[in-house]
Picture 1: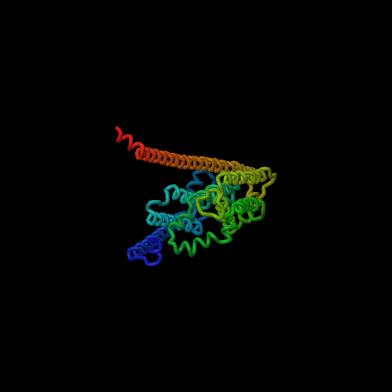
Picture 2 (picture 1 turned 120 degrees about the vertical axis):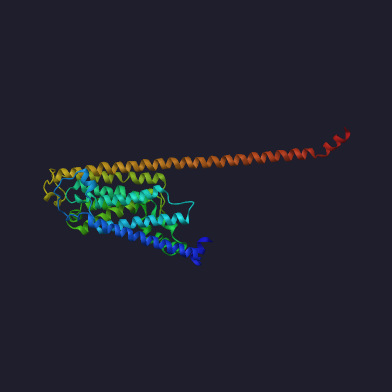
Length: 368
């Protein structure tokens, strides 16, 4: 009734509240834009794509040597501001069930992982060292994607939207054919596998090192396929197929061999796979083949470690789920036993009352 009232005939207070919310959102976005412009004027411009920095990479440069790419930074800032506005809206409409702090931390952490991959010192060396490029891809596929999915953004969007918006826009998209196909666990699993193998063993990878637009496309493929892959595993948002805990664990375990075989194939290559890196020689004292082997080791170790940790997390969640089910079953059994005892007590009292009212008991009382 409240939801229909909001959609059909909102009161003045609701209209004022919504207008105020819109003004605050616009002000927030304007502040984000001003901050971005100020940042743009202070940071150094991005290096030319494919150029090798003069200084060798180190931890300090990875952490402190940031660049500003408007096509990356501005969407990240806008999405972050939009998420915070969404959280406030959910908290206002559902004060008893606000968005938990850990989901907000997960979402902002996912955006931070994208920023580290594409705007920090990691980005400065991705076309110079294959090993750094691999770190960039690991951040997108094994850090940013699962963190974003853990935040359950679709669920929060459904909770913040009006019934009319849900009915006319969001739910038709969620129930559409393309989402049903892409969200199927088998399709998501195969998409992620094909993207990983096809990009590393096709001219696309080397072309991405030379062409910024292709490089951006490659990053989009990695992040998009990873989001599809982790969506069924986390299961926090509504999807076309719901997998149980056992299926999720198997889903992850089956992805370990393709990841390991891909890493081994790169590791055992006897020559550099990508001419771009080979033409750079040994800019920091490491030749292209040794750097390639280091990249393969990063893919193998980090990828399998993330898969194992995710499986362990699913097993832990499965155990908690079984404990909750057992606890609920025990509570139902206790309630049933208590109901049986209550009925037995009532039956005993009724029999005692009926025995006291029997004809023989009255005659015996008169004789005495």
